[in-house]
Length: 414
Picture 1 (tube, rainbow, N blue to C red):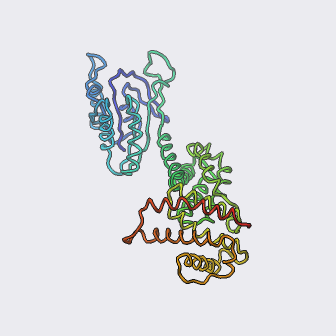
Picture 2: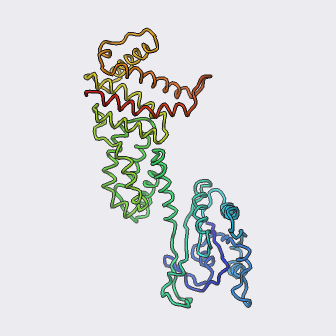
Picture 3: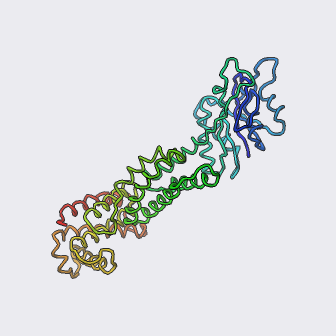
């Protein structure tokens, strides 16, 4: 494990830093960091001012003191003062560049100054995502929380070391929630939930009953959503709403970051949830239109167009009545009828079944089917033609679809 720490140009006073039964008495936290957490190397980042700082003329610099006390274990890296945006980016580069792919690190912000703590959290998040770095801990020696709190402090005064790693975890949870809310991708937040469940079980620190199940349901919801499985989406969203309520106490106890996000996620799922997704009904189709709108808000145009096309077939089956709306032969019959009606609009010869001609929405259905067919072909062929339409034109056409679907449903007597 490698430790990254900082020094400022301030007079530090001696106290005893404590962590889970371990302690070390010092004025310089990088020393306590080395003695308590036993890293193989301590890298201390210093500005030129901090590098040359002496508590008094009779004393060595902090750099010299640490080099003497941690001989062979410590090295120093100079960073700029951070007086401009460019210098802040340079600090970020220096700190992140000190860690190699796959390493394990502990980050210390005890003596970090000004904006450095924020940079440290940004570096930690960056390293985990780009270099597969294991951030073991982010720690802070809480001098101001020492016990007893007296002035001046005495060496025996005990200052707790705070573990700030959960704040980094919160960034991950927030990123997962953002992926779900922006793109309908629940993968990251589901992984965090399953990992939390497994860690609690493995370490014996908790016995959650629903965290893993909830994570798996979120994974299933996300997969069904992106693979255009509306019945699975509606069913799983319905189950998730119940699970979110049942697991509320577990969030508060073992997955607090998720507890802060749970209400947002509940609101996201609620419009998609439906208890009877396998029954063809007006309400089912209303929910599916909502799902088409959801897809478009998330810029999932392919899924929106794909579902809209199948929605039209289901709508016709609902209007016609009878048959099995999920049976292939029934859906293909309706598809042929729609195709024939759309062909007629293009002045092509095609026989339209009498039952379809009798539908009050016949012409609207034919026009919409023709439009959806063109959109689907544009998407399915990936623009591989000389006359391929621009992506933004396809997206604009797709955005008009929900209103047309709702218009059909409103005009129907089913």
